[in-house]
Length: 267
Image 1 (cartoon, helix red, strand yellow):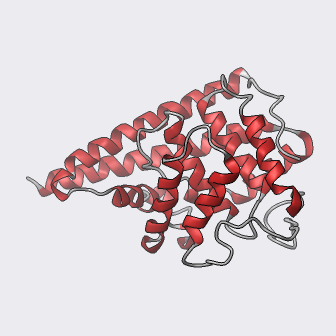
Image 2 (cartoon, helix red, strand yellow; image 1 turned 90 degrees about the horizontal axis):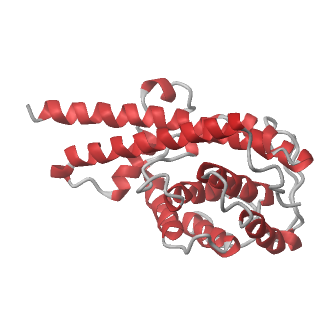
């Protein structure tokens, strides 16, 4: 049931969008570095950097995000520990081992009995689970380890693919396998954030993809269902790249506005 990447390489249109996303990531990383240089007297920490990128979105994007989706300060420590696990992992990783490690870091305090443990029961995702997403067929609990191993095999067929596409496919594959009872999206998004660094798209994890991907949860669900049903990988990859561009544009404006604020405070 794992993703089939037979549809790559992607079309010229998709490649153009992927290149645009990579350029926006470069700009966001540059703006983040500039912000951190101005904030040097305050010794901006790694945690603060991620919190600013994930939670202090500019007004335009904030207006579109339900308040509950903002990155709350109390979750930053766990999110950072999950990111550290991704960043310290060999790359490409053993996805089964990595996702268990990340899930354990994210949920060891809130759900210690389930943290890092694959689900033992079968799940169905659909209208009964969440009214705003289409039905998704999930692997049986006994097939999870094999599905993650197969995902690694499928991803290994993408060495020449665009790095943004590799991040998108890894994220989609993890959500489609859905190895845990709860917290699959958070684990997959944390791995995607670290993958942006491993793929050379960012020099440090200064962007949280969670707000924008959760804002478009319904669209994400439909595109993932299309991957499962028809193997339509490219539409999801393009969608993921467009989400990254929106996120980067908002974050770049936020970082530059913060630079201006700090500059005025020193005048």
